[in-house]
Length: 249
Image 1 (cartoon, one colour):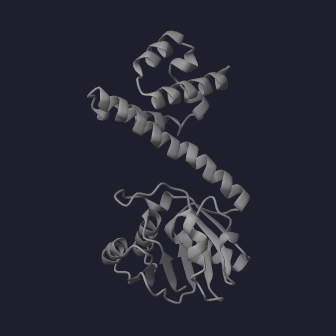
Image 2 (cartoon, helix red, strand yellow):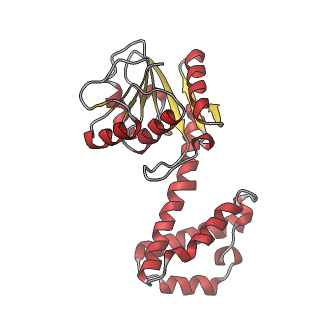
Image 3 (tube, one colour):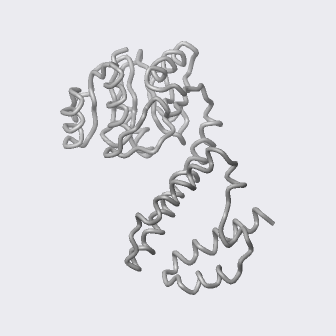
């Protein structure tokens, strides 16, 4: 299918890269940010525009959730298949008389970090089985892990991803605040972080839990609370320890 990617952020960049690496031709990348569009265009030899949206058979909208609806209104081709990449939006958010779909890659994307696209789960949803099959086959060129999904399932996939990724990364950032405040090299903690992630490849996360809260070590908990001078850090520390205690009561 003649394909256009709409967007210039992290997801759009990685889709352009994944498509290019797998010899899937992208006919245009379209968006508002000409600087980022030109970078993607130069790296992957894809024509770009921030003015004229090319006519296509497939449009993949890879923009922020808040922009999906408005962007979708730019597409006038009623014969086109249009898919967004959001984990939290229904395909019905797309406004137009074209065929609607979702093409959701379950991964955290940063332009500066290489990824093995073959391991990324893709979740497909479409208005009909023909479009579902087309998107499934497209995703299968990129990934070894493609499933048909419903919006109901995808919502909970996205919620789980926020807990498993976004919240965890925020804790890394908060941990680095503490290490930086005491001139501790954050690299000390990388082996610990790696082992924590490695363990859940072999253990249910609930059974991999360690630390003072699961042990009921009130002396250590009190000591840590006294050491924390930042109110937000202290709130997080207390909240998470209470959650751990309740899980193992």
